[in-house]
Length: 204
Image (cartoon, rainbow, N blue to C red):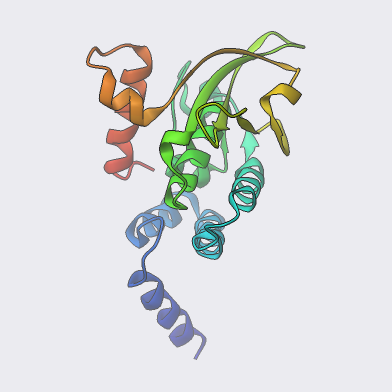
């Protein structure tokens, strides 16, 4: 009976609209184990609960920020044996670990799925004032002239940029604008282009 129930829910999940394709979740389970699969299923439940909350952006921002911040911070060198690697959201949640770019990337795609206009989401390179270390956060702009809200793996609380005295902004980019305006393969474009290709291939 238990196996029949599990089969029923697996079929139901397979034919419902999901954030992550069920075939990818099966690949995740095979590569990373049952706990990784459970993280993906929990992610699906979370996003499903938020998808229709069109009137409350802050609920979406807060829930997404807290969910991905539960993953462990580990450097690219430890995880991928590379100095600077942008992991796909599948890799990040599968390993349950990543560096600052990986948190920001996972949050960006989840919020985009939740119908938040991607033109309002910017990746921002900063320096942490106390340690002078490079860092990346995700910023949400309600309007082009409004003060952005900062989603950061260093804290579960979302603050306006003016309240983050610990961060020194360096530069920022928006993926939608980046893809439309940049023809040359500069550093950021190359990284983003490579990331999108790996996501489309379902790299885990």
